[in-house]
Length: 559
Image 1 (cartoon, one colour):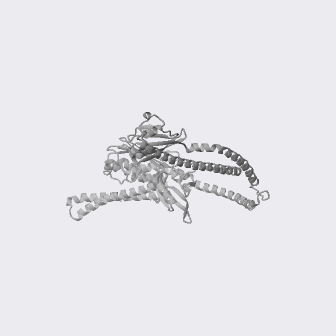
Image 2: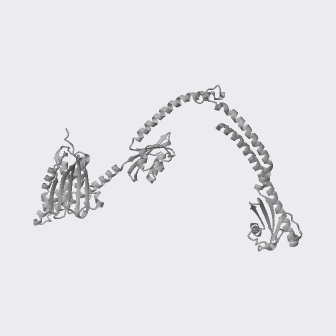
């Protein structure tokens, strides 16, 4: 049986069944309501008559009267049962809590109904208060609506069965006859001769549509493959969703950047990220406003751009781009910190120079102190010039604008020259230097490599202990030159090792202020090494010293 045949068959059966069922319930309901209203009125009248008789003759009337199926109970004003036509009054409990009794005592009359699901009966009660405060209650038992319904269903069951069988047979015959010509249509090559004439225009259009659909399906498949190939090659995340935020298409980068797992099941954009900023951004786009937000994930910072796809002032969907801005945010943080640190470092020597100059200009300095203060001005000026030179060098390395005059540089000879230039500083602190290793030649900028080695050796002297030593070793492995600078200083705690190459970062600020320097030396080392495509790392043991290792690629001279 086809789906259409089943629908026709089920429609006939369903309509017949619903019509008969509604008719049964309506007839039973009307009958039940009429019977219930009549019984309630009769009970009310009987209660009134019995109450009047008891008022005139007292309990004697109750004892000599046969009430039939009615149950009559006489209750005192305190709730004690005085008389009951069905049971011994002594066996009955206090009735003052019954609903109908309370209503009769308070207002003169009371009614209540009690149902028995087991017996499928309903007990109706009517109570009337006598002049002495006692109450006459009359009760009657009626069949409930389900019981009445079952009683009426018995004669109708036969009719319902006959109707179902007739409907079943006619539905099968009629439905099969109607759908047979339709089922015989060849949808790939529809013909009008063997079908209903009414379907002829539809079948002609269907033939034309088949050709267009086949062509469009091929084009659509090609377009989807091209779109998928393009979006999957994007490093940026792309999400397209409908007006209810259900994802229509997305690329792998979107899930990777947001830290979500890709699933084949349908889900909304909100399931990709649970942060409030992301949710508000998507909601703004769904409301017709372009929105941007910055969110942080375990893998870094992400910028989310959500734009509505409007058509005639109606939002039909949204397009969401997810960008990895971790490096950009880090650079922005470094820029702010660098600006703040530069301002502070420049302000310190300028303040000193200005203060001493002001004292000299106002004649506040003794003649014998002029030389000492002039020396202080010169030292602060030297510090300022050194700082500015370091900042300029670092800026050139950052922007890759340092003059590139590459040449062959012998690292052993360069290290020997630098140690000689720093001999005076080493002697002042009684620090001894040692150079070991081989003559290794690299191709690069002599000026930048000089700054790298100079800063490493200078730090090995400045942050060494009195009477300590440092060693410079030049070695190589295949295609790499290795520079190792080791000292016997106080060492660097492990918690600080990851930040020592940051600009102006100082491990011990109180001690660093006493040591001449700009705080940019290791930053210049890092950028200078990176300028040559190399790497630098530091290892340190507190109380024993620090070792810096630089690895540089050995390149042949460029033509």
